[in-house]
Structures are given as C-alpha cells and as structure tokens.
Image 1 (cartoon, rainbow, N blue to C red):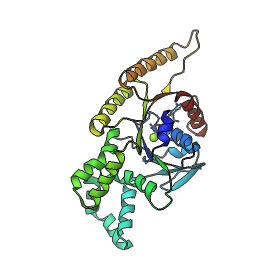
Image 2: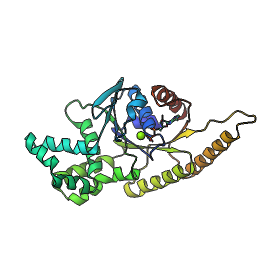
Image 3: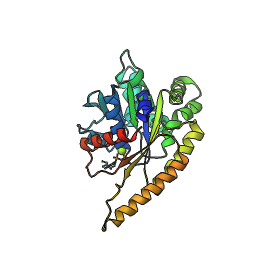
Length: 287
Ligand SMILES: Nc1ncnc2c1ncn2[C@@H]1O[C@H](COP(=O)(O)OP(=O)(O)O)[C@@H](O)[C@H]1O
Ligand SMILES: [Mg+2]
C-alpha cells in the first residue's frame, strides 16, 4: 500500500513541520492528489499570512471557502474567528453573542484556556466532516500552524478535556481527542528539509508523537532536495549540498522506517505549476 492509498482512507490529515520547510506546499500536493482520487477535499490553512491560495492559484480566502479545482476547496482559518463563530452558534441572540465575544472575560478565557484555540480549529475540521447529511468534505487536510511544536496541536484536545473535566466544552474536547487518537480516521504527514536542524527536529517530533500520543505519522516528506549535479567542474557547491542532503536522509532513515518520500527543489516559483510537478514526482516516489 502506498502512503497516498493510506491517506485516502483518512478523514483528517494534519500536515505538520517547522515553518519554511514546505508544509503548505505539501498540503497542496496532497490535496491535489487526493482530490484526483475522488475524495472531496477541504484544505485548511492556519496562518494569518495566507499562502495556500498562491500555491493553488486562487483568490485569497479571507476566511471563506474558495474552490481550487475539481473536488478541492481551500479556506484560511483564524482561531479567534472560529471561537467567535462558535459563540454565535450557541448564543442565538446576536447582540448577546456580540457582548460575550467583546467582553474582556471572554478574551482572557480564550487566551488563557490551555489548548482552546487548537481544539477550536480541530473542532471546526471535525464539524466540516460530520455536520449534516452530506458534509462539505470527505477529507480535511489541515496545514497546521508553524508556531510551536507540531505536537501542540495534536495534544491540545486531550489537555483541554482534562482541564475542563466534563461540561459541554470538556465533552467536545474528549470527543476530539478520541477522534485524533483513531489511526483509521486521522493521519499525520510530516514535512521536513533534509538539513541538519530540520532533521533533528523531525526526529524529536517523531519521538514526542510516539511518546505522548502513541502516534506514527502516515508519511514523512523530505522536501527541497538538491538535484544530483552532472559530472564536471564548477558545480562543487551543488555537490556538497546534495551530499549533505543524503547524509541527513540517512540519519532520518536510521530512525524512521515508515513511508518516506523525497522531493527535489524545483526551479519554479510558488504556484500551481510547482504543485503539479511535485505531485507527479510524489507519485513516482510513493511506492
Ligand atoms: N520542492 C520545492 N521546490 C521548489 N520550491 C519549493 C519546494 N517546496 C517549497 N518550495 C517553495 O518554498 C517556499 C516555502 O514553502 P511553503 O510550503 O510555503 O513552506 P511552509 O508552509 O512550510 O512555510 C514557497 O515559496 C514554496 O513555493
Ligand atoms: Mg505555510
């Protein structure tokens, strides 16, 4: 079974990794490929600096759902807006909901409750998948926030459930924690560069995910590899970089025996052409 086969069976795929390693690019590639397989895919980006739309060549989302191809949509999400949306849903009187959202107490609660923002984001993904008779998507790909450790997002609902101990919020968080812990429904794709620091962080993250959640990613992607230069003089720098990539890949492989896909650094700007080329390369590598 290829990694893509496995991901196609999931309802939620969380793409994680440090900023700048190609997380949004990988989310776009997976979105394209899984939509091509017949899944209706919603890509959720949690970054105030929107870039997912550039990768896929659409208008910016600004919080709205934007079509990005056959069976593919994208949306930029702000945690605060998601939480405010929840208040408006639960409190039917508009002026009252607004009063709550604007109150300092609410603001303190949102900022102070451990894991609340992360849980709200995951809850939004969950509702998208389960609300109504025909949910909006079969599969949500969450381009996770770059800030903090990738494990923060995934451990948040469990922590919040513990802190809240029951009640509506606690129950919701506990449901989400159970959803995330179900490897048949939720998967993680980890993006990294084949360079010293990113590989070190990836190895640490793999350990943390295993220790805290008993979780093994469905896929690790080593992105942005330098191509093997042709023989001859003048390309020493490229050769050195490539050798470094290979050494770091070997270090990763020594600790990670799961699915690993490497993608080359292509001479293309951010945009649909890059995503298409990387999607083709992904299929070649993912066997
Ligand atoms: N394999 C690749 N080849 C060429 N450019 C890439 C590749 N992967 C990512 N990029 C470019 O690198 C930049 C950062 O990638 P991005 O996916 O936005 O990173 P992140 O979401 O992790 O911050 C973008 O401009 C993107 O187009
Ligand atoms: Mg990004």
